[in-house]
Length: 235
Length: 287
Image 1 (tube, rainbow over the protein chains, first blue to last red):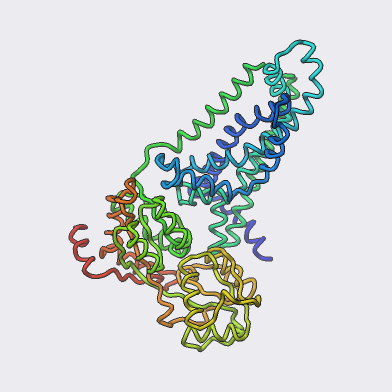
Image 2 (image 1 turned 45 degrees about the horizontal axis):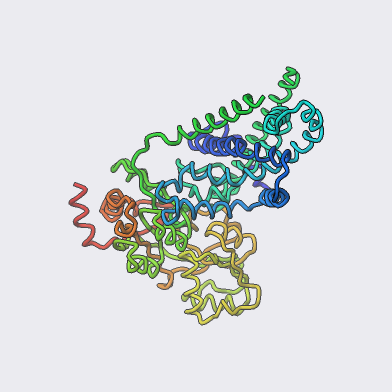
């Protein structure tokens, strides 16, 4: 398997040269996925917390659907967003198709259910712990929701990171709504797909290695921040 | 504590918007070209587009998909230019009112590639139909694109010429990948199977393993590329002025010479063949 050896040296060569094309692709990948994660967290975390705290009709169905949506195939999301943003679709007038914005929209739809569902699980455990205490203090449900989100912020990072992992690794949705346009919507995963289709397997795997390292770095950074905060004793 | 949450949420949205803002900076004028993976994977666009960009100041954003998908994108108005290789679909596109006019731009050829040991013994055959008959007779593995691309459409018509009903096949030597040319070549290489490839993608394909060209030169394997400006009357947002400049350039001597000078490993990949009567007025324009 000479391809593996070649891939590793290719990855090193790519990083060593740090050519403009590569850094452009890496930066766009990070930009799109981090934007998507931030937006999805603002939407998904409160939804997850609300599902853990409040009882309302249809709640079980909502949770089941949410859990099922964690596994939505990215191509399906891509197709739906394409149909919505296409000039022939309802939001065509905005001309968003084949832009990074379209890619962010697709990724937000893709990872919001994941973040919300994981947040619900974290919040449910916390709520079991704190419910009596908060009730005895006469805290309003809305204040309790805020308190729990703040209290569980470190555990919630896992949900957010899971969302980031899914966003940065997916290729199906960004390929359809981004179009893999050079210098405009080409990201790590679509570059890898392109190199595979040219038969440049070593280069494709080299890019893959960089993607994995990037993912490890982001996760490591969050883990480090989390550790520091805990020692700082803000809780 | 609620205020803290709100503050964090606000910060997150602000950060996301600031990331957005950078991508929404003032852009140079651009057009979107729906094309086939062969023009992209061969490296032709990487060679041509910078030349056009320098001369015109217009960025060309390429969507490299199969011909079938490219036509659908252009029908929906999601591209300004259609640049593909299946004349019947292109003519229908214009006839249906989606395109202004269709022009020949360049050609190359399709080739039948397969394992060097050639189990169906097609090497030396002159006719593509005869070669396909040999493959079917030997039940040697053949991988089809199966993705409604220009190459797939051509392959289906070749099977028809050979008198073989592939839709009715029950044996498993004929397999559809449902993927692009490159992915299909990767699979053919791994399976030691035959396949039909466009010569542009083939020339620039690096994972050939044991595959080689076994048949070429049959007139039925002629591969014509055409360009069409999407019709502003059907899709009012189409950038017809910028798009027309790209079409004019492709058909002009400058564009045609650029196409002819593109080579892969010393071999010319596409031969320009825009109609001469189109070339003349464009030449005046460029001067």
